Length: 178
Image (cartoon, rainbow, N blue to C red; front, side, top):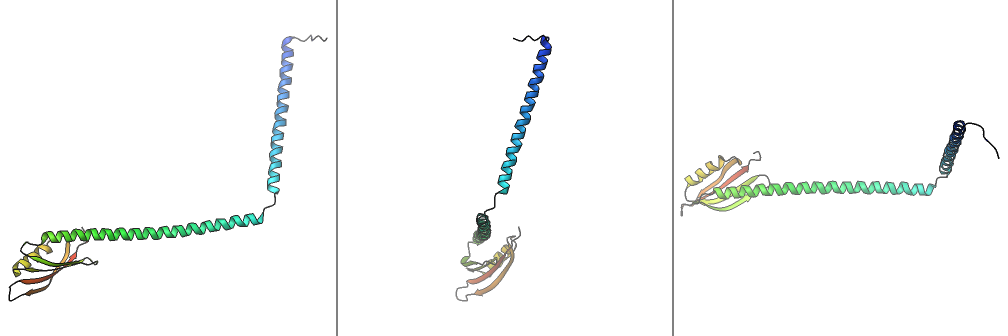
């Protein structure tokens, strides 16, 4: 049996210092093992020979995917252009339908409209009959004052001598500006 004659506080101090040293040595060993194992893994991974066939396959797949994506983008662009063209056509037809409705509302009750033709070039041609030339003249004047029309032209005017009925053709050009 051994007897330690050192005071208690000195013994505790030596024990604490030895424990700190032991922990420091363990920490250094752990850090060394960690760094060594990671270095070894890095060496193994970086030293592994590259499989050229697999690399070439990956490059080909990537190139095919890029080509497919470009084709899909082109198809999407064409679809968007077609959609925009259809929307423009739909808008134009809606505008023309509104113009036709407006023209039909403006026809005096004493006139008889025989033909109304709307073209894609923003023109409409009206043909009809009226009991007098004055009615036709007043109606052409009323149409020419409408902001909806840029140009109103009395294209043809005939009078049936037997019945006295005036047959007319009016050309209207739509005004696209509001």
